[in-house]
Length: 302
Image 1 (cartoon, one colour):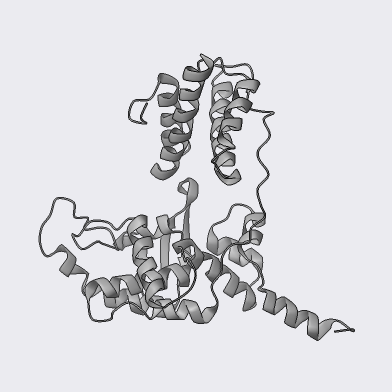
Image 2: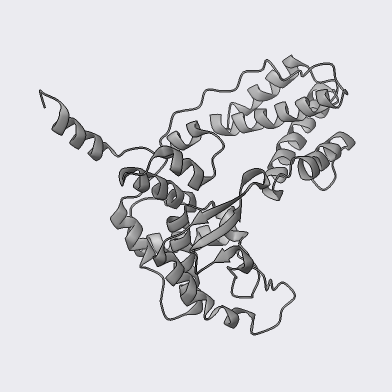
């Protein structure tokens, strides 16, 4: 069963996510992929409907995922199932959630991947300054690092969202929450250079063109997160960095470098658009070298 052919209950849940929760298309799609797979398991293996699912059936499904799914992937699937059954309870379609007492898998406490400042600068300097696509990529990288934007937020930017004189962009974050994000002068200069030639990408009329989007592909359509990640991979290879760098690593680096420069964590939480301070604390950590230097300078026996 594809997400295009949903059962009635999942169709109602989709409408709830879109209309009441204001979830992004990406979030809705991930929920439905997880739930379609779970429903298939119930029907084919357990001969149960979604409404007839039991605690044991959900645990059995989670057990089947343990073989070839990481704890984070299993945790995400269980979160989708729990959200779905909470919705059914609120709609009075069930007296209680069969998923409520199913325990999430323990997740490893991995620190986010952060780049040293010199590696970030090397990546930022890599795109060509002579072509419109190179100028675009330079502006993208400067905005990711200069504003700490999520990749989805950056792709969703429209021309009217950018106040270049005030160095502020308006972004739509998770849960359709809008926030204003300051960006540095370097990012605005890179953006100005790109926007001066952006019209070249719209010169040949095509059906998929998006005249409102800030960042366009070579055919004039809105750039996608996957395309940006692919371009970033190219620049990382050209820099000869021996590591995988995702667009989100630029956001991690933004937060961690601000913290290292003296910014308080509450301000960083606002800049990142985190609802919980605990999330920000995970995204921002001090490097081992900084900790070692502090220890050496402060401990009486160091």
